[in-house]
Image (cartoon, rainbow, N blue to C red; front, side, top):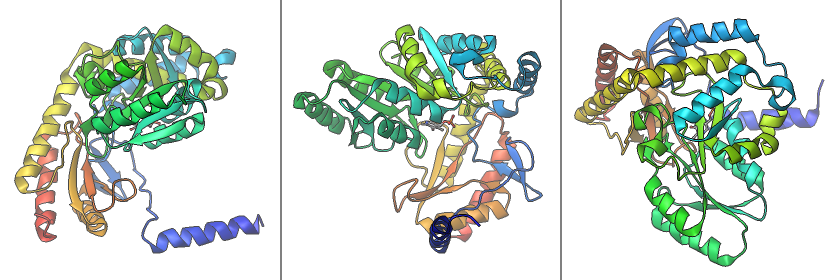
Length: 396
Ligand SMILES: *Cc1c(COP(=O)(O)O)cnc(C)c1O
């Protein structure tokens, strides 16, 4: 039978969401998440994955996950601190530190877990965190979990950050103050103003924390946003995910040896959740090897991104202020954006609409994620659909 209270809670709330059109159905892919996907027996050009470099479906990465699985087994068998640390985890961490130009790195089971563990490992109720208002949900939750006072500053508003940082410092209330930002903001594709953030941080002795989930593998020739600005030795925490450009799953912190030593005894998901699978670690190692040997995938990603942006803009779409391959098409009205996404879908293009509360009200958009695995021909086909549907709906 189950609890009546729970049943009432669930049915009322589900009904409420559904009646307001806010309960979205999850699509299931019949196969891999490559540049072309199949849903309900139909083939679609995929513009919604984070598989920036096409590595999730790269045969070399797939093979590497299989070999690592054969060698080390399907699961790590324990949390890292008991006896779940396998040779392949150490290898991956050494490689990640190289990749990020830091002394050391520590992996987690996901980027989300990494933010859950890393922030609370150093910040507590006697501290304050300055957080960009558009930071990712996992940063917001990680900050809450730490118990520190969270002070939000306007998106990439350096004057606001400076004022709030000075106020926090002068209040004398906090032992430590941290500033946290995404490296690349995934809704608009804009880049954090890291040189200015570092300047303010160094002046006021703030701890710096950059979550570069969308920048790694994309900016700085692949090394990420911090490397793009040449700031590798001036950021305390560089967070990355292994699930986007790297194409597998997992998260990591790159920083000093001392920081990593501390996280090993204080980051709770590291201590209390089983280590990432050996297969995933092997796949990540191969992805990093591919990235360090050739810039080809990175170059193709940028070429495709520039091409898509240029063509959408020529067609008359509002593509916002993206500085990365992430290409939004800002529609404004929520239901119009949903309808446009649906029209694209019916004509063979998978590009999701992002609406409030994921983006501010009245700025609903379709977000396009071109990857290195798309051919120009696929992008042209998608653009043809954009033009037709856009004209039909009076968007362009
Ligand atoms: C996607 C994302 C995460 C979560 O990473 P996962 O590895 O998918 O858990 C964390 N932070 C930011 C900024 C992200 O974009």
